[in-house]
Amino acid sequence: LRSFPGASVYCTSKAAVNQFTRCIALDLAPNNVRVNAVNPGVIITDIQRRSGMSAEEFPKYLERCKQTHALGRVGTTREVTDAIIFLASDLSSFITGATMPIDGGKHLLCPR
Image 1 (spheres, one colour):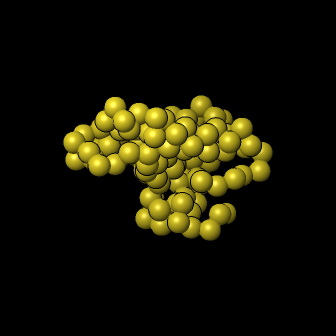
Image 2 (cartoon, rainbow, N blue to C red; image 1 turned 90 degrees about the vertical axis):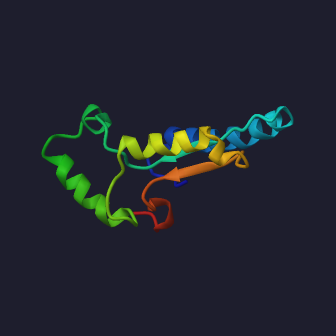
């Protein structure tokens, strides 16, 4: 979880989701209810276009992401949904209170 200039509300909301996940996991554990979250990084969706990124800027953005992601690429919606399916399945029956980064290792690298 990183902080970015000009994005205090966004960064704070991501931190709040992480803490909420841990707290509610503790509250619901006595009922054998597991609570986990995913923390996706850059995922290819139409959010880039909706946020004002032009068709010319998008390929440059993807190229820049090769340097900011340990795996050298951005993610797909399928990769995020696969993680969610795993966390909702019995394969993760002993996992609760976790926030799983789905970010190609971006969280491992130094910011910017």
